[in-house]
Image 1 (spheres, rainbow over the protein chains, first blue to last red):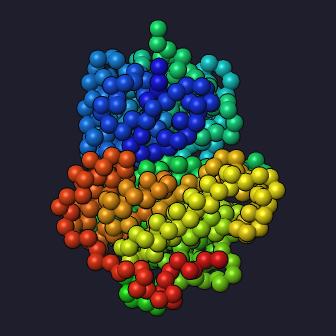
Image 2 (cartoon, chains in turn yellow, blue):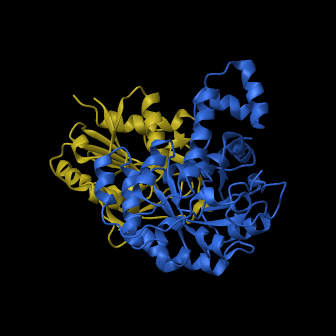
Image 3 (cartoon, each protein chain N blue to C red):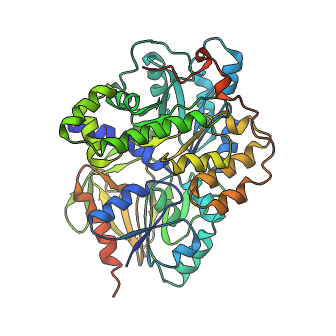
Length: 196
Length: 295
């Protein structure tokens, strides 16, 4: 079964390459009708404010909300994608929408401007560590007890990778990494949401 | 070596995040807010849009840092700013200001007729203009993390942007067909680093994201250049020199995201008011053209 990648704006190409390297077929989603063909979706990194507007104007937002309520879709969001999944967005725009599918509060651009962007060590709960890019990255400030923490920053212990049921979100970009190790994050999403 | 690679990857990373989006020229915080409201992925902060720089003449320099700061405070999206070609002094100031991207731009008056900025020395990423692949690869060798077509800024005429984009993508397609020996000859012709030419032969892509700039004025223009291989769009004078900037900005954002769907581009193209008046770029003498700046 193909994995959808929301392709309204953002680093769609990088996610597609990761899925390709894992031999998983992907399909780019730019309309609500295309959404009906997938049960798994990646929301890429990008600008959450721009994506929010495009989600609403294309009505993909409405259709996604329905699918989340029906529990008929699994979603993995990276960076802006996590912001769009979260219950509460801090330092966002007033009119910015989010899908409220992950019970976390996320602060936008919490590390500062691009000059603060870097690779950081992330310790995985499943063992091992990865070193993905954090680009103008957000921070997860509050995590409800319903949410599992799957990865933490090595230095501060802050949660950076979380999961709640069919929803998964990362503050970083596992799709932007020195080596293939970061693929483990996409593999986790695929394992958790394996279709029987 | 690894650290440099990392740097480039982080720098290129932000360009990856801007793909499929629109970066808009703004000259004050009010315009910056209109741009953000309309769904811009970033703004370019400057004192005068290219159409006015063209009209006013004289020396065009980096904007007042206080203006850039005001725009940084007004919006939550990335803020870029322009430095003159070769003017690393201006670029250092922009890095201290923590702008998110520096555009070493032919729209400003060049500060060095021989050398561009050594962009490897900076932590803030750079975007540079190019009219052909050789120029693009020279800028990448100097450390540029994003390439944009130059087009002919401040005209509202898309013809030069189309020419530059087509030239770059055409050369890339040719390289993918060359054998090992021919690649060296091609690198010599392009006056470009042979390693970069080899990389293109393997990947069929520029090593950094390729965006389009220079003369985009309508949603149809955005759709055209995206279909020609641009991965995002810069709009300079085209928005705030038009009759209804807010509506036009939103329409260009929609057309860039949905460039493959003419129905959507049609819908957003209706009733946008007056476009910028524009100048046909063929009426400009060579000395009036900005695209010849850069070496």
